[in-house]
Length: 333
Image (cartoon, rainbow, N blue to C red; front, side, top):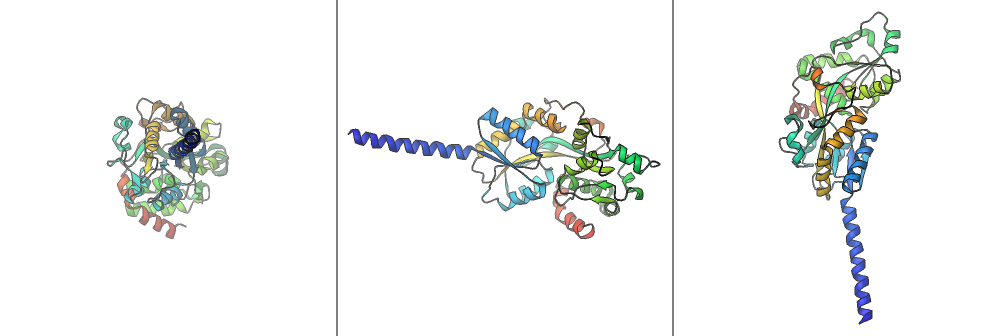
């Protein structure tokens, strides 16, 4: 009898360990992060601290991760897509790759920050602007006025001194491209973009590149998110911020992969990312504007009320993405 009990006890212990291990493995949250490494690391660490759920992330460009999410929709290798403008999340949702989830905290965010079908939720507001390295600009263009509008960037004198990301890889630049098409109209917008492209000296893949290249003085002018430019300015780089009229804004979004094996953990992460603590952490690191009305922006961030924005059609941006990028690749690159 003792031998039988010992055997049964050993079997029970082995089963319990196996089940516990499976539960732990199942609960580990995996995040595809479009946001920067610093923010992704800080947010996943805080999430683990608040919930006890282990979290890891993979950082890559918007285009790469959205393509991966769509390709993996039947067998997702991650649970969360964190970051990227709404048009990219719409693209993934239309491909059947996202799981709807209506977070209780989403009820208090602006309507434009929540998908009608709850497949994505915005967690911070992003607006585009112009960054100028003041020392390089003064040296290169001593008799030229600082650009204040998008049209000012078409000055032929700026040839080779402008940096913007590749819209095929970066949600930042695609937002800019769509902004020009929507504010000017299709034909006039393309005329503007093709003319501007002739003055661009570099098209890096990452949205974080232009602020860095402007801050270090490798280019005089950069097109980027204002919050990214503000961050470099706060670090002491010689950057002048310009918020042109008729600019465009969007939200950085979070969404859950369809067929995720960790749905409970993924839903907890969405709740977490909309919380005051997570929103203020994000703003403190990246100078973004929170969507949670109870969260405060970090000092130095440009208030959304001070920026003139067009009415941006995210659905149109998503629907036109392939045609726009095909034409961009053919005519610009």
